[in-house]
Image (cartoon, rainbow, N blue to C red; front, side, top):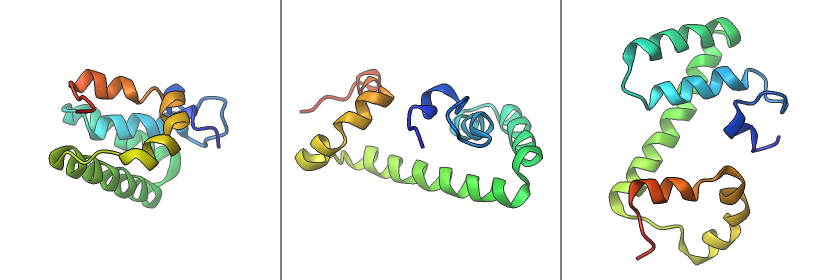
Length: 105
């Protein structure tokens, strides 16, 4: 799978229902409950109820891990920083650190 599909909604990158899955994940972390309900129903139509529940579980677990890491100030560490640099660059993840006001200090 091409991880670049995360940034373009999975279109043309071989991720089945990629756009619907990304819209669902984004709605889950947003504040618009009406949008979440609409996107959830669209996802159920696209992949079925059981698969939507699986997707919600996966997205929820990642959100939980990110909140714990952010709350405790966990850093990647030197090894993981090096190992993940190409992935972070391809996905543009360092822009999120800058936007949130994080520093490496």
